[in-house]
Length: 278
Ligand code: NAP
Image 1: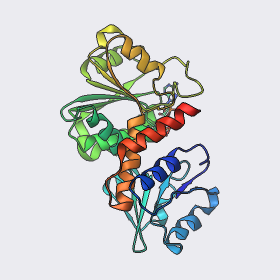
Image 2: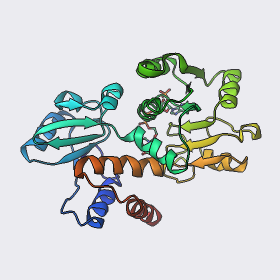
Image 3: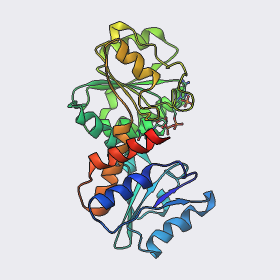
């Protein structure tokens, strides 16, 4: 099931049901709209109904934690859960978002190991991606922020492994920005700027030809190519959309629930088809 509010727009049911059919598994994935005050009883319902697993989305990623029996390491560090596995009545919370991003990067043949990485934004998606990156020995992470307190909180979350290699960069400081973008090999936009329907919104960072060495990733997948990615391509950067992250976070959850290898290509195709129809 998918637990969230709202859930109607989500492509996860389509993606997972297609994956079950592709592998001939007699499973089904159902979106469930949960009222804010009912999240505890919704979680008990997973046990009561022997439901094998769940995805958790806004606004419950943090709120489900007190109702779970165990947390994986990354969910514990992030204090946010997007996947629950019910094994013999024991509920374990995982977070596959950030790992999904790393897998999509690896699909391009790129490893975070030894890289200097600049992340724009300090919200939930930034936290997921940054924590996952710390498991892959990057050289350093620049957190490009608008709100200082949130940047400090994110740095503290990452301190478990990279205490001296997290650098805070204010969007208001042109010189700090230039040095972060010059030093980095990978730039990741984790903000919603440029997301449908505001596709013409000015990107937060103006890319200049001197940054053509960057691989520019956007976590947004609607549109598939944001204005940031269009501008990056124009100056010759390699680019990565958020679609791969979405597919891989789902694939990792699928594997945790079913124990089967996820049919990635089939999942990607069905999501792309449904986006083309919209
Ligand atoms: P969030 O928790 O609300 O965080 C948004 C972040 O963006 C905040 O740090 C916010 O800064 C910053 N921001 C927003 N507008 C800004 C602006 N004009 N200038 C500077 N900073 C700005 O949201 P989220 O859950 O992290 O999601 C962010 C994006 O990631 C969404 O577009 C979502 O679709 C995408 N996402 C994609 C996937 C995937 O599977 N591909 C998964 C998760 C999320 P302040 O704190 O200063 O407001």
